[in-house]
Image (cartoon, rainbow, N blue to C red):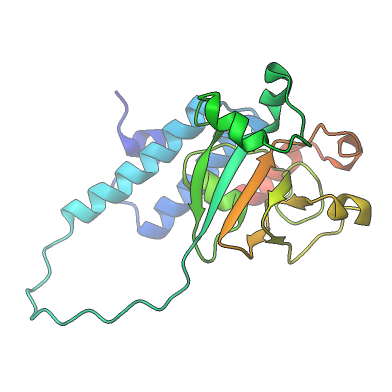
Length: 217
């Protein structure tokens, strides 16, 4: 079995910065939208987590200090997001406009790839949060200039700092971009992988031209 460092194609003695850089390059290569697969994407993600955990275990123990009373944490909490894969709607005879769509999804016992919940931590975009939890959601430019990463917001609010692609009528129907979308509400429900919805096809870009650009960021 390959070691985490072999999966990431990096020397075990590499710096933290080089480890992060190697991970970013490999995770883009492994993404299904960029010629990889879901299994490989998750394998690379697991290797990165294992490499980081190994470094933490190997770190020398810190000098024992007198414990202080912890101060209350007044920082912002993450947003709780329930997600659903648009690709499974046809299989079950569901429609985006169904009033109890997420209730039906919960009763259907879908695979975690297709339905579930995660927390978007402060500072994460919706797409980053999905990727950081091992999910390979569609994307291309990551800059608000295409609709590959579009989601339908069924409940809650998602703010987009940049968007040069979505027409006003789509925004009015809750269509947002996950690549730079930041949750504004504590609870959200979104349908992802909606890139083939009518009207979105012509707003998409082929993902491959962006692969090299982001690998060298």
